[in-house]
Length: 452
Image: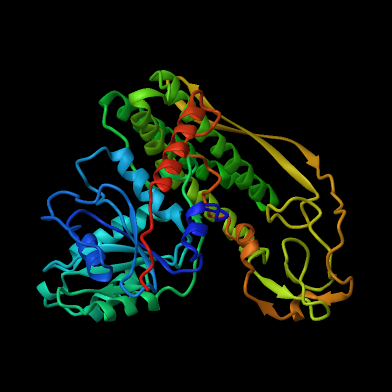
């Protein structure tokens, strides 16, 4: 999920840019609209729980003007699913978010609301840590312990923000509980790059589903054969192999996308566009799970080389991360000789590998060939950073990883693996249609006047 600048003109029109903003998501009948009625001055928003009364995302000032809370359509409405998802995404784009609350309804069995939270939390893995929380409604209908359920959510799902509501909960108390969780604000943006990571819109045409399964199984078979073949390599050859195979597999995702689109005559245009994009997304998301294992391998090598460790120069207070070299003396300002892929300074030569998936007597086999080594071209940096003093890495004080370096030290993120690559013929039309729909949905979100 990428950050974006706040360019929505509504911010300026409201005159209140720096307000806490909370978005409610959940299934139909969980009580989102009832919560809106309780916390704001809105009326007649809740229904009978069988279908979604809310058709678009709508922000409201709370009754005391301390916060803006956004109601979204239930996630299983009978209306057009693509437009429904666009409306939910628009809520994320409307304003920098303080908290995204998954609203679930309490049930006699604690496992049921826990499963509903897990369902949403799994879909929202692309969102930054610290934004997601949950609010359990209808707590007056169950007898189980709030503390026990909170511990389950924290231990099993890693969600620390767990709130509860009863029919007779006083609105000021509930509002204060929510506000207490709004300790930071994140500027999120859903666009064509991540829309299909967060929302499922695929259909179930048998022929295409079967081809999707074959492509995903092929991807898994390649990974399984690689795990066996890599045993023949050791030391830096093995590390080179992992990184280069990872890059090759990322390209295989795009190859599979093109194949699925071509063999099924996808155009990503017209009334079938949403379903076609959904088929590609379904396949790609399954392949991303396989790629994740490879990213964990890269993370292991990065950890071994100290790249997850940030330290501060005592002379100029500049913060550094070591991605090559030893733990001894160095110079403040020395930077990597090559682009960061966490392979250490001993890799002045890189083994280059080629990979192919070959059909041999009606069975497929992964072929790995080691090509002649290639020398690294050392790059010089034009700008000067750091004080130039001699420092000893092992003696420097450790500090928290700066946010701007998060991408460097979290190689297991999958952001750069496209759900629908622009290289797939026709994909650009889908990208433009999604971005237009999202912009249009945000433009129709109107914030009411702030209470005096």
